[in-house]
Image 1 (tube, rainbow, N blue to C red):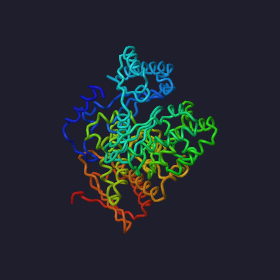
Image 2: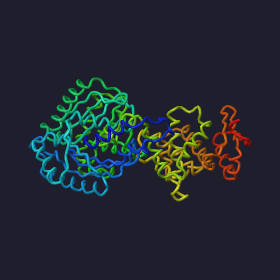
Image 3: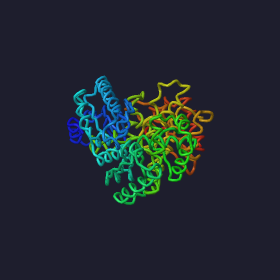
Image 4: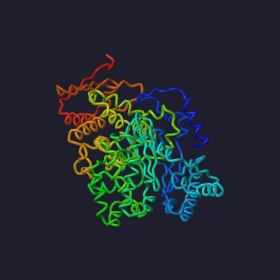
Length: 526
């Protein structure tokens, strides 16, 4: 971490405590937290050099800019002991480009880290000196265990409090890190990167023996790991793309994509039998990446056989996100990335920022018996219910669904993305039949689809009742056993309850299977 980053982190730690409730003051409004609002990091890897500029809610940042240049710095390293000469030229040109881009974006600095290739090459220090001389940029070379820690912290950025084993594969190395209760534990590094495996003697038989022995050594060091396996790295993501293609999986979002030991076994066999060029084209994988996939698949096959995880999740967050996480104080790390991101979106894009809180509180009686995990999605939906108002009315429902299911939102399983998207679709439309999203809706069961529809229609009704801050809103009462929905109108609310609002209330009641009773009251406080 740079000295500026360390100062930023210390300043954030010293800020005053704030309300940690859902609708407490969001940290992105804190001037000191805004020091993290735009952060540029560069990862100089064995296979590629990538610039990522994070922007937005500090706890769940948006990718303001993301560019990767395939340089293959580590190609031939095992035999030559030096960086690939052509790769050095590409990497230096990439860093020059990234430096100019950062200046144009107003970034004060770039934090640059290099991993296995620069770390292991005899001319690694010479390359660092060349970059410093030509650009003024400093490259921080991290060891394998530090790389494992940063990758694990990247996973924690998206899954606060998660537990399991993080496996990050690069071009020249593969790292393992144990996470539990939001902390990083044991860490190990190995030479199981596909660029290194190309140079193992003895063909496939020799590679299999090398992979098996190395994996056994890793198991001895890491111990039994039977929880979730988080896969980080471009080669793992490419294999996940192939798995999606093989299964005809409808939601093409890699982050939080789930696989099983069995599905991985089937996909590895699928890769071994496939025409790689045809498969590359069908899955949208670059030629440079596809050339590494068969070797990475051999590693993954042995990895899951060795550690036998209960389930497997793809993480799009890794070392670069871990560098951002490194700069966060603990109170920021503890925040829910989904809710922080939704609060930021509401503040930036909604017509009436802050109304999401009022909407949630107004509708809460309908969902008071909802489990906490689902209630979290209801809160998120209320915060997002109005952020797509600029879209054309004919496409607003589809825009909402697209944003929820495909946007960069952390802390969401694919089924939760679909639930959130379906609720927001029904915020603007009573029907979902005939949309291009019907196949995605099948990722959740009929009960969840119905609950999402009820939430969407509840928001559709509640959105009709905008009030001033001092106005007294009405009350909804839901008697689930009697199937009765009561609406109590305060004097401030009566003028807002017109024909359209009444029609939306009746649509909500229809989805609930409820009888409606509307009453006028003097005050909701009585």
